[in-house]
Image (cartoon, rainbow over all chains, first blue to last red; front, side, top):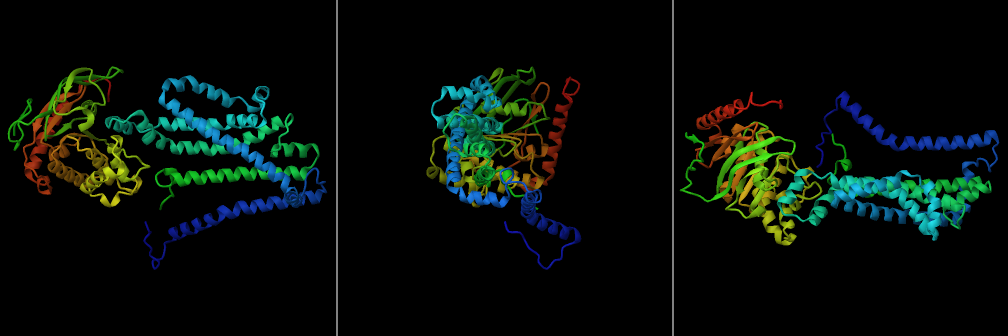
Length: 283
Length: 274
């Protein structure tokens, strides 16, 4: 709905203050972090220069950018490997998490019996489980995928389970009154009701699957012939190639940020019409 | 006006009408030991507008759930000679209880959809129902874009889209402001007169029950039971003129007295509670 505007009417002091504050906040939201970031990078550069720190200990930001450019072929092909593991494991986390949640929702007994196993998988540090996976699984990609999946699937599972179970009681009665089958109730009621919860879990899982992919490669790296960003970092660490190490780090965090933003956008687009979390604050 | 334990004949009913539903000595005891209902006898006939009126805790909502088949009685029996199963029952909850992600059209379509009616085939019935509740222009809106009163209209349209013979309503207008409530009362009576379904209406408002009903079942609490049945012998159509008439005021006073009696019969008997 279009707001009714009264351009001729002067605002009172309080409203004018409010408008000014809102405008400032809108600009500041972007400008402030940017400014701090630039300042931090400048400070980083100055510290290197003032203290004459050699570039194999702490490279200047310019050198890192240069490395990002000169090692682009190597770094980006590694990024691709890491991203492939990340997305595959995220996909598996979604399929596995939602699938298990649906099973749990269909059977209270199933949930009671198997949920503890999911918790055990979640709370045991993946680094500690990895040696076992290393023994049992041969294929390098499968190893990494399994690791990243274990890390990422739990938030999807637990959030979706919560969502499937938090359906309005009256709506369930309504479905019963209309003779809905289990399948109809799941499809028309429980799954849509679980959507906001699932998307919340997905946002967490997106970040976790990247972490899982990197950590898994780190642990596997010592024994493997992998070539993701994690092995670039290990390699660069051994060779005291700090500029490349920094460049790889930057790529990883950029990838994480992009994943988060994309998933936030997806979530917003799906929920914007009906869910409170996606509504703009009014008035 | 007469009020009696036995269900009185309705004005203008033209003799005996088929009994749609009857409760015989119905009791409900919950697993936590609370007796929600005890020995309830009630007969609901075709075309009735029956209000269940009583203080909170008198089991009127439980009675409605039993009638709907959402719950089964601990003792006694519910007979549905005029109705075969749930298919003829529409239910309106205290909250609009809409699917927040679905459009108004899809919400009203839902009961038909669950019966396997595809969208195109359901569309005429859905649009007709929406027109009846004056929401045809809002078919594409989602619930959060509607006011409380409009949401309740959607809920009523959804309950009536399957053309049920019985409409069960559980304090549907309790959360609405008075102006909206009056308007919805008027519209509900229009619908009822037009389509001749039967209504069982749970409320705690004397004024609402008198305005709407042909018959009021006053209930008492602890244990929930029927205290008295009252016939409301005022002609239809009822409208603003009726709402401001001395006859309406007298009926309300009479009903209030009976309700007061029902509440008094509770106090002292109850331990626990409030």
